[in-house]
Each structure stands twice: as structure tokens, then as C-alpha cells.
Length: 270
Length: 334
Ligand SMILES: Nc1ncnc2c1ncn2[C@@H]1O[C@H](COP(=O)(O)OP(=O)(O)OP(=O)(O)O)[C@@H](O)[C@H]1O
Ligand SMILES: [Mg+2]
Image (cartoon, rainbow over all chains, first blue to last red; front, side):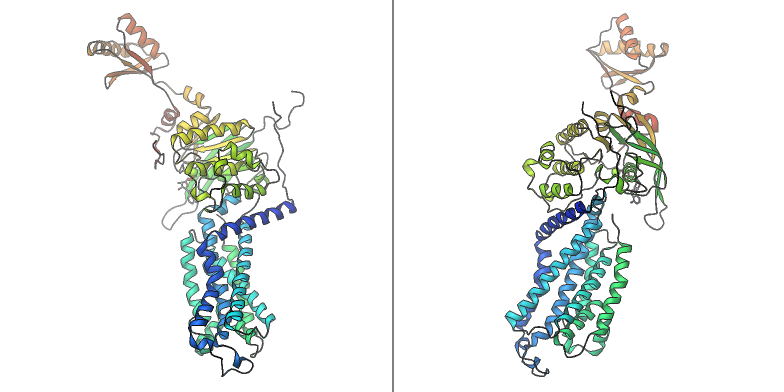
């Protein structure tokens, strides 16, 4: 007869094990994520495609901006559109990719299934935050490189300011995405809610009416919206001739401080 | 045994007076008491069943004991720990198969086993598990493309990948065809034989009767019966049945007369009624004896005599006074 083990359970807290398991989960989630072509297209390729498409199609986008102060008077018109496209990349991942992802995990019972294992479901959300950050780096990076190589857009005047605004835009918008996904019982619901915020956000960040020709009152409203502030701040950092985007940085910080705790608090884990 | 096991005899799972009320689902509806008073104990190495109709509170009960839900009252001990106070304490040692599917459609069988295995300090050998669950041939297939039976088997494999001491399996054969169900039953027995204590949740009477060493029957959030399947069936009051068939109508009419008279005269025989072209006689455990004697004395020879099989279904009818009905019958006909 085999001796039956009668281990009385104790809390096992091998940091190393958890750490390895997190990255195993990361690897597997990444592979599975890459198997969804539409999701991958929107998260990674859509912003660059829009930039290159419009940059090549619209005549004004390839003409130099003669009215701009030097050295920008030699840059193509599409230059002012690039920061908007970076904001679009942030918005697309946080409002179309992320909410559907998290709500679908809930809908399919994956969050609850993980609750039964030593790996709490918070890790799955963490893994996807990492994946989304990586996706954003690829997506925004592709837009910048594509814009510079194909369209001849000059590099940012204040790359550090651009980076700072990008990081804050990401924290603010990812927090918004988390909040959108916090309660939805179905992927569809989260998707609908995300779209409801996505399209107006795009409008205020200059996707349809470029920031340079946007009426004053719209810019005023845009400043207080996370994606609007993102686009404005990125634009100021890129051109570097209007000073530090202090108001935009503050707005993005406040949004993060409000939305993130709210998203975490309201998030349903089953 | 040379060294007494300190834990030998202590139940692996102890639930007493468990209570759980869900808040009103929508406005207008009242709060819903899913579990009002459930107690039971599970010994190491047994297949213990929680049986009951849809909505009886089975899933709620196991979710409370697995520490996935907060109970409103009562106590729960799993492997000596209180999962209500600290659910993480039992995660390493309790494998759970949930009622609903719970994986990405695009993850493959092997990937799922790998990932879930990585969560545990001790893990079962993936190849062995795949073999045990007949999934080796499908290991590179994506979850969304598996059949219902394959999904359920993978789900069981994931519940076992951390070498648990207790496996909770919720409705594991719902939606499976009869062949797949029987295969799954054998599998559960193999799991028990490997030393894992199994808590099996089901609304199928035949499944509980076939598989469980002991079980509780739950109805409306309460335990209405408890014991081994055979003891529960043995314990049924009165009303055993015998069916008789005769070669011709003459013999049958004569037998009907004899047996009706017998029912009036003999306390062990309750009634004799025609059912189709057969006669059904009911009574105490001595009914068969009485019937055979009466017929033999009159030299009326039946063509065929069958005792009616009694099942857990009869137990349910007796303890609840209702027919056992599963609201939505999800069973797939062969
Ligand atoms: N999250 C919930 N919120 C509100 N009510 C619930 C919830 N989960 C279950 N219930 C209700 O509680 C009762 C018991 O549900 P439970 O899922 O425990 O039953 P069950 O015995 O597992 O049924 P089934 O055989 O259908 O799986 C049902 O009436 C159900 O509608
Ligand atoms: Mg259930």
C-alpha cells in the first residue's frame, strides 16, 4: 500500500517560483495574443498604416509647412500629424484592445479559473498590461520610424518631453481601459463602451481635424481629456517651440491618479 | 500499522451549517438564498458526491469550500485549514474543475498544461497526464477546436496538474454523449485510485450512484439525504416492486384475482395493478416471496418475473415528495 501523504498545507510563497510562473504565463499569453489577427492588426499596425496612407495620399501632407518657424518650415505637412498618430496608438490599445481582452477573460471564466490556482488572476491582468505596453512600443515606434523613413518627418525636438508625455498618456489611458473593463460581464459590452469613448477621444486628439486647424474651443476641451491632452503634449514635445506642456502633464497625472484606483477598486475578478 | 498517522481519520473536508445568500440580482427581485444549511464530511481517498437538481446550491457550496466565495454562515475546513479566512492556503492542494469552460479558444492543450503546471510547486508529469486523459493525440490542438468531451478531459487534467490532495469536479459529464460519460467515469475512478480525494458535483442520479462512495443529496439549499448510494437505496421504505408476465390472458386474469386477494390478506403486499400486459405487485421486501408462494400454491406459472430496480431517484422522491426533474435537460442523446 502506498503511504498517503498527509501534508497539512502551509502558505507556500516561493518568490522565485511565482516570478518564473509569471513569465511562463506571459510567454503563453503573448503567443495566444498573436494568434488573433484582427487584434494584432489594430494594436500594432493600424496607426502606422493610417499615417503612411494619409501622408502619401493627401497632397498638403507632403508639401513643406512654409508658414512654420524654422527649422520646421522645411518639414512635410504630415509632421504635425505624427504626434496625433502616437496618441491614436495609445488610445487604440487602451480603448479597443484592452477592455475587450479583460471582459472576455471574465466572460469565459478565465479569471475565476485562475482564482482556483496559486496564481491569482491579478497576474493575468498584469501580464496583459506588459503585453499592451510592448504592443504600444512597437506600434508607436513603427509610426515614428515609418514617418521618418517614408515621409521624411524630422525627429522630435524634445525627445525626453515626448517620452514623458507618452508614459503619462499610457498610464492615464490604460487606467481608463481598466475602468471600462472593470464591470462588463461580456467582451461585447466592454467593446461597445470602449468605442463610445474611443471615437470622441480621437476627435479631440486631432485624428479627423488636425490640431493645427482645430478651433480654439475644441482644443480647450481637448486639454482636459486624457487623449486630447496626450496629443497636445506630444505635439508640443515634438516641435519644442511652445515650451513645456505643463498643463497637459498635470491633466494626464490627475487622470491617472483618479482612474487607476477606481479601475482597481471596481474590477470584478469573477 | 506501525506508526499511526496523525491525520488518519480526520476528514479532508468538513462543512458545517454552510449558508449563502446572493443579493438581489435585479431590482424588484429579492435576495436569493442558494444554500441555507449544508453540512457534510469527506474522508481521505473517497469519491464524495453532491447530488441535486438544477439550482439546488451545489456549485455555490463547492465555491464556498474552495474559498472562491464568501459564505454568510457556517464553517468550512479543507485539509485542516479555513479557506474562507485565507483561500491561498489551500490553492496548492485543491484542484478545481469549474462548471463552465475557462480557457482561451486559441491556447493548445499542451500549452495550457504547461502554464497551469508552472503555478504549482509540485507538478504532475504532463506526458503522463495527457496519457491518463487520452489527450496525447490532441496535445497540439487549440482549446476552441476540441470536442465537448476533450474539453472536459483537459479541464480535469488542469485540475490535477498541481498534484492536488483534493480534486473538485463540477458537472463534468454535462453535455457529453453516453460513451464519453462512461469513459470519464472510469477516469474519475482512476484518479481516486491514485490517492486523490474526489468531490464530485452532479445532477445525474446514475452518475452519482455509479461513482460515489458516499454522497449528500441537496435540494433547495439543504441536505435531504446522506450516505452510501446502496445504503440510501436499501433504506427506502416499502414499495418494492415485482413485475410478472404471463403466456396468455387466461393465466393473467387468474393471477390478477389471486394477487388482488393476496394484497388484501397479506400485510407484506400493498397492491397488484395491471401495467400494460404485465402485473405490477408492490409491497415490503417480502413481496417477491409472498407472490411466488401464492402463485405456486395455485399452480399459476408466470412466464417472467422481474424485480423493479430501485435507484437514487426513488430516494429523492421519498425525501422530497417530488419527482426528480432536471429543469433543462442538457443530456445529449446517443
Ligand atoms: N452569482 C449569483 N448571483 C445570484 N444568484 C445566484 C448566483 N449564482 C447562483 N445563484 C442562484 O443560486 C441558486 C443555486 O445556484 P447554484 O449554481 O449553486 O446551483 P447548482 O446546484 O450548482 O445548479 P446547476 O445544477 O444548475 O449547476 C440558483 O437559484 C441560482 O440561480
Ligand atoms: Mg452548478
